[in-house]
Image (tube, rainbow, N blue to C red; front, side, top):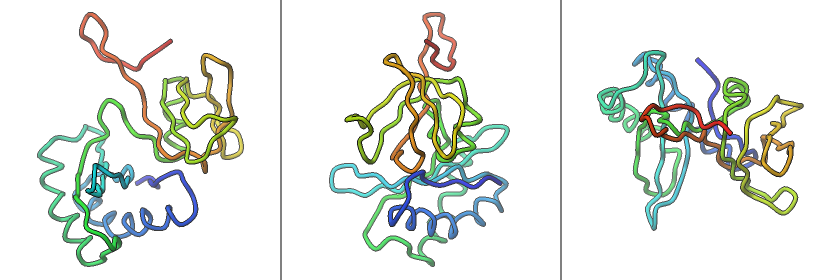
Length: 173
């Protein structure tokens, strides 16, 4: 099993790590892998996303089967003080990237990155994933290459597009 989690550090990392500790055994017992967790906001509602995977893929039935078990584990540990809605999901076509291993695995593919703090006056980047350098990912963008510290990344997702022929694949430039 991999070591999933949000890329950001500090206090924001403590909550997802407590959540991971509470739910990883449940997900592992279901023969699934925990990719990572995200906390997001939709209006006034807090959403806790749990991303699961399996080498053969994840079905809606897999998500529905493990969701009540994840909910029960979170009720026991209670890592979030406020009310939230739990959503269990496969990574999908716009797969979230959570850790250094994800960036290494998808090197050469296009990604959208949102930073928690601005880098050179920007918080959003789109480009191809290059090699890792000392806890930084090299991102090849239309305006040149950027070294982005993993600790500055708030959210990263692969970009996919549907071709005219209807086949799916990683977005290439």
